[in-house]
Image (cartoon, rainbow, N blue to C red; front, top):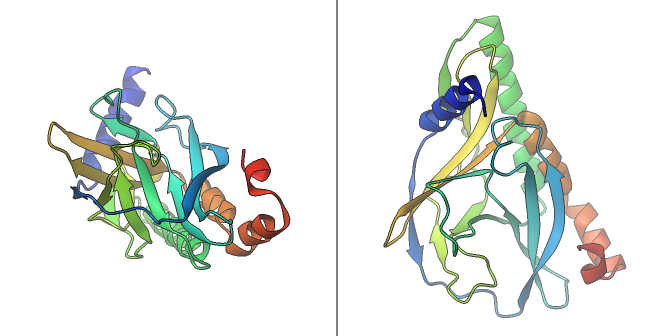
Length: 219
């Protein structure tokens, strides 16, 4: 990463709102399994030097008739992850998840247009649309030490350093662990979130779940 990109990324992250999540031991759905849904190549340049892709998993019932959560891997983490850390965002799945994410994208583009018209040099502001972010975790769902954490921030932030750099969406959480506070970031462009919203379309996923073998389909 060159110095200019490093400065932009550092500023972007520092401008994101930091919230604290508390770990707790909540049991997983009893009749559930986790499956790989898809991997999406990011458009945003801010995530390109850690996770270039967004992996999306689904937690479904054993008979694949019900989807509990859409599981999304953060684009960045700080400090550097310890070997046993593998954080994820858990979005409660419903027929409105895709619609809600599309509303965030729409508001983001509205604000970007206003920022250009008014030559706004710098802006950090929560988009006042609550997303169904249900849990966070610092370990994989299949890890024996898996624990949920309660996210305290359920809104994306509109983050812009300057007009030339352009704005991004940022969802930031700090999971307060015993040994170290792990900060996780989901930094996306409008195109990124729009693509993810399309992938989360309820009717499309449910149709595929009912008509195809889930373990073959989501590989």
